[in-house]
Image 1 (cartoon, rainbow, N blue to C red):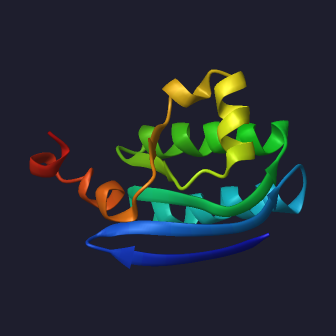
Image 2 (cartoon, rainbow, N blue to C red):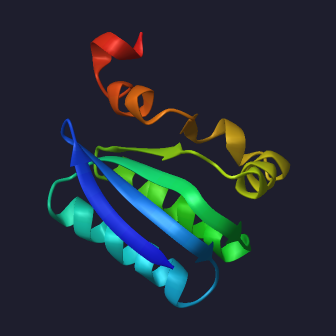
Length: 117
């Protein structure tokens, strides 16, 4: 799995690519989110556009990351779900838990109170 981070208007976007599965991949995602939290980066978007597969452990890690960020006073949103990831979140009913966006600009602006309305 490939992971890179970038900043846009005080929001950290984590670009993910490849597969999110049990093992190193979920560990990499967990480490990335924990590192961001430790650096007080609590506005996080996970860009899943390049994620072609996610298993139950990967879904569990998304939920774990969501909870970790929330416990630390932040927000975690998902961006650009592939059809496979979208379907899995629909089946597991997690689609209603996450704030999911299809447009990066709107996702970044959704952290701003004035634009979120």
